[in-house]
Structures are given as structure tokens and as C-alpha cells.
Length: 605
Ligand code: ADP
Ligand code: ZN
Image (cartoon, rainbow, N blue to C red; front, side):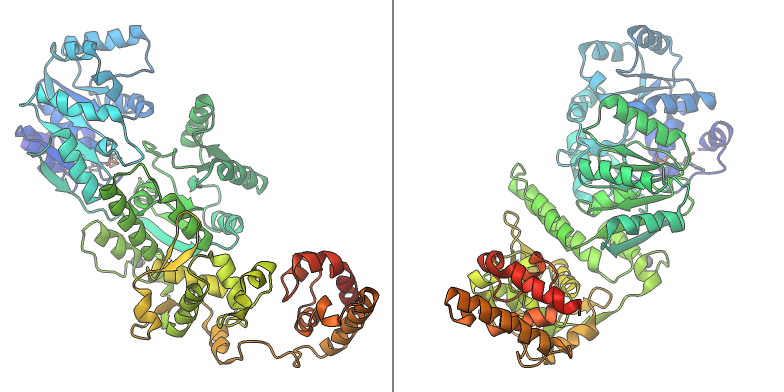
């Protein structure tokens, strides 16, 4: 080990090992295998580079990141270490030159792209030099269900079978148990010692917020905290990537798009500009990121929900590799939760994987709405004990509170039940708000006991309640139609046997408190505005005229309740008018303009 420390100082210029590095190097130098789980920026490369220098022969480093190989080799050369790479970016002449060096025993490390490994010529080559160790970087690429899956990685076990006595080391920044087991199994690393480092990234600040006007929130975040700094903004769709990047540019923020739909050259160019230039924002889908080892990414924003916590952790992990403070900002709303749920339905997954995926998704949703220290939750998820508050997450800094909201939860749940457990949040909220759309009338939902129950609250409040209920697993979403239905957990709540707590910042309790004590339907005789009665009379006058022209009873034009709402709400457009009680499509077409005119004239004085 003295020799190791000596080289560490001499070659790498480091004073000592970090964390598990020393133990990992000893394991490899002793001829054993290792599986290394270490967060981004933790210092994984040293774990195979140092043994490679001490062992006779050449270390074979398998890496899917062709774009990075050149940099890695160059930086090793800068340290005076002889290294080379073989991948598809090279000309045959260049490759031959590397092979010649290899066969002359001049390389301590050889980086290879996985697709090389399966060729006969490469097998042949392997027999002609001494392999000191095998290192598999980004080892999670072996996982069939991860989005970084590389089929060529599945061939590695066979290759290793030919070299039973050569040490093998697999490395990844993925922390989850299932992937860990998959790596061991698929690479045949049953005898490997597993080294798990802490996945805490103390320099990362977590913030998760409710998305209202996403773009504005994004802009404010960048302008107030990260003007002129490099960052990544993740969006779900290619179109949103394009639109957001363009929009940021119009707002004076230099941004580039990146997604799988761009031409490869364009993608490569954007990536290069992002890495080389300072202060650029990369707006991207998840196609962007693996192998980005730009050290000074100061923020990562999620404009849409990542798939689960592993994905969130990995995507956010790209920030702050240099150990300096970096900000993470995730924005989401109810619609995102529903989209998230729809995406979940992947029929290609075998049932046991689907169950596991579902559990991870459910956990992630509850994490979003939790008031616990983010770091504590994340580390617990990865099997680590950590005692918050960390002082560097939204929940530690803002200390959100929860309040008992059982009654509200019951109202929202019962509304789902009474409407038949098949409608989306938009409709459910409309029913609670007592809106009068043709759909509500047609379905008879204006006759339900929950109709208008939540009128004095805002739509946002009710969405907040539904979001919380979904995150807590009381409500589920039908992945096909997006309709909400009750889970088993909802029954005790409806029966009054289990309390429900809601985040105070997601729901305006004062407003909602009024809801429950108010009459559930407006009393037509009462007007909240002093002059509404006058308007009401004018509307009645119009109704009378229309009725006599058509020889109809006036109530067939609109009943009093509709006129009452018109006088109170005073809609200014056909669309707004159409939302009122008793205003269906046909009546809107026949009479809408006449009634709007009266309302407008009245408002104009
Ligand atoms: P990873 O591959 O795990 O993301 P790297 O191997 O790129 O991380 O290392 C991250 C940074 O930490 C690099 O800048 C590296 O030089 C530095 N580093 C690694 N080991 C040590 C050490 N023992 N002492 C000081 N710095 C280290
Ligand atoms: Zn915290």
C-alpha cells in the first residue's frame, strides 16, 4: 500500500485516498473482483487507474462513452500515464497504431467501446497481450430496464469467462438495490466485494416546487440565482425542449436544445458548445447527460417529472461535480402526476419488473409532497441512514407545515366516489366548484351532494388537495383514461377512521375552512354584489322578450338560477358563459350573444 500512496502523490498529485478508494484498490491489487457504487464526482476512475499502474500488463476499460474516451486518455497522458483507446471514431490507421503500441506493451490502460468487444478480431487481439484488469465503467448499462441499456454489455460475462483469474471491477453511480443485483448477475461478479459509498452530495441543494407558470418560474430561478452560469433544464418532450430553449433565448438567456430528434452532428455540436463555453443553458430530454463530466454545472432544473427517484438522483447528480454549491429545482403540478402515471403503463415489461417499477413510482410521488428533509428521504431510499435537517433543501429551509385536512379529503374522495370513479381531475374540480358545463348537466353531476361543495375555494386549492391525496396513495389514476379512483387506503378515511394531513402550502386552509360551513348551493335570492339585482332584472327582461318571440315559457330559455349566475359572474365571453349553470351548447348558440350583450351594456354603465 505504501507503493499506492506513493503513486497517488506522485502521479495524481493527491494527498490521500478518498472514502473507499484505498480498500477498493487493495481488493483489485490482491486479485479480487469489486463492484463499486459511488456517486458522481466520488472518484471512481482512480479505483482502476491506480491498480492499472501497479499491475503488470494493460488494463482494459470498457466504457460506453465514446465522446469522453479521448479526454480521459488525454488527461492520463497529461499525468504521464501511457493510455490509448479503440472506438468507432477512429480511422483504421489510428486504430492500428494503438494496437501496435498495445502489443509492444507500451500502454497501461486501454479504453474500449463495448461494441468492439464482440468482434473476433478483438478476441484475437486479447490473446496477444497481458490484461492486468478489467474495468467496466457505467456498469448499470447492463440493466435491461434502465434507459442506458447497452446490449453489448451482456456479452461481457462471456468474455470474463475466458479470463477467470484476472481481477474485474465494475463501477456505477447508480445506487439502487435492484440494479446492483442485476450487475452482479449479468457480469458474473458473484465473488466480487461490493463497495457502497455514501450517496450524499452535500454540495447539492434540493428544491421541489408546485408548477404554476413553469417558464416564468424557470426564468426567475435562473435570473435571480444563476445568471450567466451553466445549467441543464430537463423537459419531457422534444417539442418542449425546442420551445423552452427558444423562449429562454428571447429572454436573454443563452440556451441550446438537445434531444434524440436532432441530427447527430447537431447534437454533438450543441454538446460540445455546452461543455466548452461558459454560462450556457442546455435544455434537453433525458437523452442528454450520461457521460457529461463538465465539472461546473451550477444547476439542474426539471420542468417535468423524472421517472422515479433513481432517475432524479442521476439527472441531478450531473450538477456540482467540482464540489461547489449547485442548485436543483424540480417543478411539477397535478397534470404532471397524471401524465407520469400514464407513462407508467409499459406493456413490454414483465410483470415482476412492472410491480417493482410501480412501487418506485409510488414512492417517488410521496417523496414529492413529503415535508421531510429531502436528503434524509433520498438517502433512506438508497439504504443509508441520515439524520436531517440538512439545511440545504426546501423542506429544511422553508419548514412547511401539515394540517389536519380530513374533512377536505373526505369531500374530495367522496366526489370521486359519487361521480363513479372514472373522471379526471378537471371534471372532479368542476363538480366541486359547482360549475355548469353541458357535460356536468348531461351526466347529472349537478344533482350530486358534492356539487358546489367547494365553491368558495379556488380550483387551485382543490387541485392541491387531489395532488396530496394522489401522492399519499389514497387516490389512483387509471393509466388509460386518466380517471381517478379510490385505493383501499381511502375507505378508512371516508369512514372517519383515519385522519389525513395536508401540506399547508399546497392548500389554502382559510378559504377551504369556509367551504364546509357554507350552504352547498347558492341561494338565488341573495346577491353578493349590490347591483346584481338590477342586472338580473334586465336579463329577465331579455328572457321575456325572447320567450314571447318564440312563444315559449321563459324558463325554457334559461331558468332563474342561470340568470342568477349570469348576474353574479358576469361572463364576458361565450366560453365563460358556457361554464354557467344551465348553459348548454345549443342554448349558448341560440341565446349566448343576446345575453352577453345585456351583460356588457350593463357593465359599461
Ligand atoms: P466519478 O467518476 O466518480 O464521477 P472522478 O473519478 O471523475 O469521479 O473524480 C472526481 C474528481 O475527484 C476528479 O476531479 C478527481 O481528480 C478527484 N479525485 C478523485 N480521487 C481523489 C483523491 N483521492 N483526492 C483528491 N481528489 C480526488
Ligand atoms: Zn434537508
